[in-house]
Length: 178
Image (cartoon, rainbow, N blue to C red; front, side, top):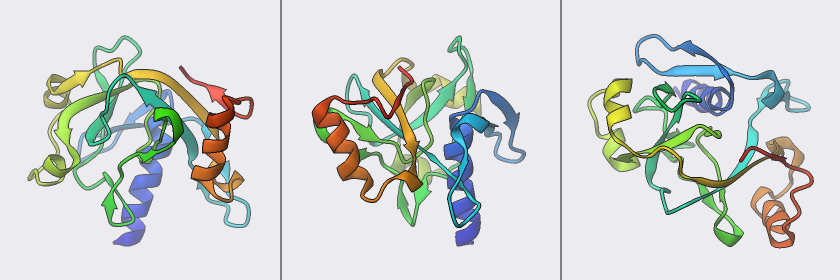
């Protein structure tokens, strides 16, 4: 079961960043892939998720994110009620310096936040359909800044190294997404 949960988390991280969508049967979750954000982790041959840091207009740290289409008229990716865990705990973003957050969910520039807290979402009997999640969106344009800073395998101590970039406002090693 742990392998299945890990696969689901990695899939959502990778898929949340892509631009081509495909439906996940059963839960109704739309996912996608983008080869630009997938790099094999040396020694494992497994794709390493991209490192995404971002700032939001207000604190949405406990709110379930979804990914919207470019025109913001529909949800193209959202988690299943069982997919918001990382290593047995809710996959909250990690606080960094200056209000930045390290993504643990697989969000991208099209992120929107729902009114569902992680605690409420996991207690649901089943994953709400996209239409219901769309109606629960509390902010469809929450980002102030967002960067993709390579992949996890590039870092020794991820939060510390990211905080160094942030303190210096040196994002030359990162790709600006917003």
